[in-house]
Length: 263
Image (tube, rainbow, N blue to C red):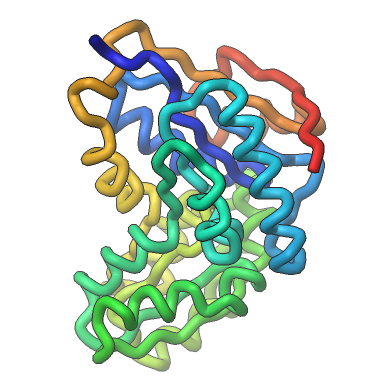
């Protein structure tokens, strides 16, 4: 018997599609249900209590659609609400912070940089998770909010992106980091520009780390052997989302649904 139920993924907006895309590449037979809470973004400037409330509403929706696994593809929600989500979910939950921290702790020898939203950076979640794995490592963090609109506009490798990257990232170069965690799911779209700004620095993309965390949860009995499906839901502005989402996914969207989320 196989399990054709989808893997549920949520983010505050479109950025989590970088995680969804990588999961679909890694597990091509699986079906996915992605929820982008576009009516209430950004989460990165909200209070921890608000992020937790929104996150619980999102997982209730995904669970109502009978998902077999939850991926919290939002760094802010993973940093601020994951324990509450785990307590509320009858299915396994994977966030993006712990897998990313695991990879960073393994690849860095001395000093790790972390970039993300204000809420993710202020939470200290990455620093705590990295140092829990390797107390000898030092961690420095910086919020890079302008990377989000640049990614959504497709301005990922032009003079504006390069100038913003230089302003945000030059302090990391001066500090001498040897690894950088891309602590927001938008940031992988700027990976080439970030790499050019910080040559020789290992870039930690949480999407790749999440795949490794999801793999052991998909036992032979839980894998899907039927035809896979890709279903995307949004809470606001579906057509604008479609334009940006297709840029993130690198392919047309087959199913896009507008849904109401309460809570």
